[in-house]
Image (tube, rainbow, N blue to C red; front, side, top):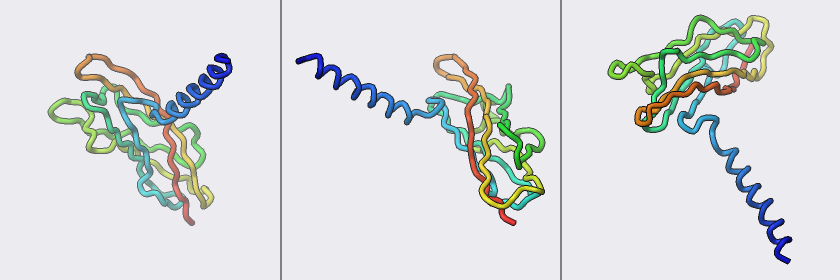
Length: 148
């Protein structure tokens, strides 16, 4: 009779683990928020993608090598220039109170409606206390409402 109870408990534990695993962000040390400014744009107009980094205590984001943003496809949106970052004058690391920005332009021929943009943010972050660094490639997704 003990075997059936174990067979019932194991799937429950696996289900709890899988449910909690979905709650974790891609990076437990740095939370990344991505949005378009403005959120509503006209075809042919310019905008900015803001990348807000929220590192855990004792973690910093490097500016060398720089943060980069790439589009998974260029359907409707084009990057303009380089990513703009602000360094903390005291540490030389990324000043996380100021968003990293990337200029963009919507295609002139884009149809009105909701445009979902998918890309990848690549950055390096380090632990001040433990002395290690990691490279992170994190998927990013946001929407732009295209109006006529």
